[in-house]
Amino acid sequence: MKIGVLAVQGAFREHEQMLQNLGAQTVYVKKKEHLEGLDGIVIPGGESTAIGRLMREYDLIAPIREMAANGIPMMGTCAGMIVLAKRIANGDEPHLAVMDVEVDRNSFGRQRESFETDLDIPAIGEAPFPAVFIRAPHIRDVGPDVTVLAKYENRVVGVQQGHLLAFSFHPELTADDRIHRYFLQLVEARTKQPAG
Ligand code: GLN
Image (cartoon, rainbow, N blue to C red; front, top):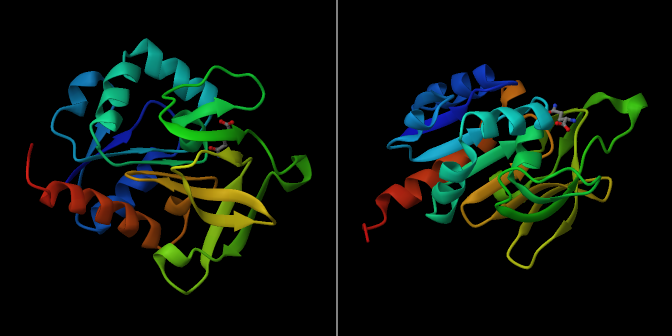
């Protein structure tokens, strides 16, 4: 499995490490040539405005959008979730605009710039997941094809829309690799499908 990790800005090294530890081959995506032959893409946390601007500058928006339309699994974490969303609450221009959700940036207030909490995420197993939130967004609204995977204090913080996953927090910053495993299962399921 060859997974691209968008590496224009933000926390991409930790994703790379975790994916490699799970046996995936990884490629840093900085130019559209790097998208060739990828089975999945991870969009890391960082600063969504900067990530979006650089993706436009490097002509990455249209090809990645097309890959999403072709069923290539993608996972966005924190800023990466904002990059995947079709709607951004404060009026920012959407970036990839492939997931039918509305996100609110910086939802958890200044006094809670970052915190860690245990979340129930039944899709990945029974044990709670240690979620690290850093100036995290949350999801205000989801479309009919979107499944809620996780909530924190009644706010949606994890979603799935078929082959697309998005989380408000940073699963790459903890030792628990179940979210990355879950993503790689989506990738594997797709690569096993007969072509055509
Ligand atoms: N608040 C940031 C943004 O809007 C995301 C923070 C993060 O990725 N840790 O882009």
